[in-house]
Length: 187
Length: 210
Image (cartoon, rainbow over all chains, first blue to last red; front, side, top):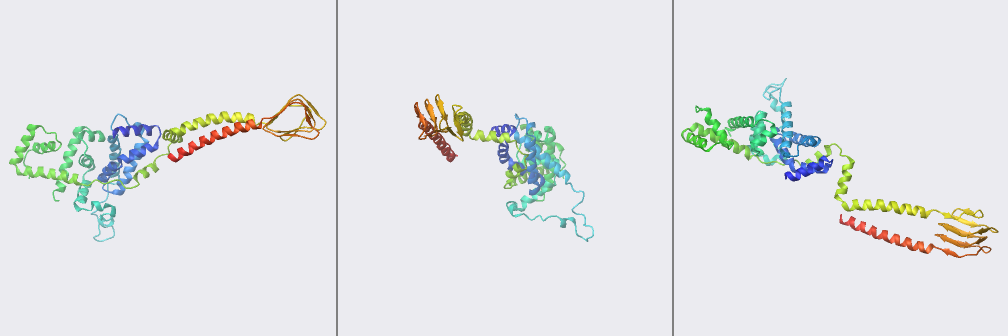
């Protein structure tokens, strides 16, 4: 697969846009999935994963052809996800009362958690609560947990994707696991 | 709840990362057998991982690739041409052939198509018809290319009409030989045409194969 991708990248570098289409086709599910687990929302995940591919295209000349393309692509995607998470970090709390109402919290203002038809596959309660718990993790733990356990990447690859020392990745995975353990204990 | 040393939890994580040496693993297992709290902790961790891994893989929405492609900056025209030629090597060769052949044939035709005739002070030109007026005498041979010749007067010499018609008026006379090379040209023309027809058929069959 890497070989095909490298060939396609060379074509993209020559200006062939269709070759990039094939790259998107190869990686779209993986990238979308990472983004979905990071952001916990289909709409945002689609937005960010598309953005990731577009960034990959416009910066393709900075990609070192001797390295693994997926690592580079994941790096773009996770960085965009983290940016998005930090930007939307709420400066209000869902438990806060809506001004001018009595007993009505911000929970009443948000979109229902009812699954959309296309999310029916995921309608199992367990699945959505796991996703919810993952979303509750601080983003630095969330990233490593998603990459490690959902994308099943090696620690070394994760450290390359996140541009962090291996030791830091390990520590974050340990802490992330502990945090999730505490959250999921009730399940 | 957990009074065991931090070290044990650390070992658990190393174990989960599959980075625990054999001796350390034995140490961990021994401890887990003797300590219920740590055993629970360890099981919870393993359960957590199982939970996270149980999340189903979800595919990107339909039309994802098209959306990405439509949002990409426009590619250079050159690349499109290159890709087209790369995908259709036969057409690339054919295009080169046609350009070269077409060029040379066109120049040949162009020179052939010109209306030309042997200049003589005594002739009159009406459109593409060279007229030797009544009472005039043309001395020497006459060649008319791609035009007609009407002789009302007299020509003292041979007359050659290429791709044209020759009219001899009642009063006109030609002393030398009269030659019309129309047929030769027609024959040549027919050959060129049939050659091109064959070429055309080849293109068409190639189109159908595409």
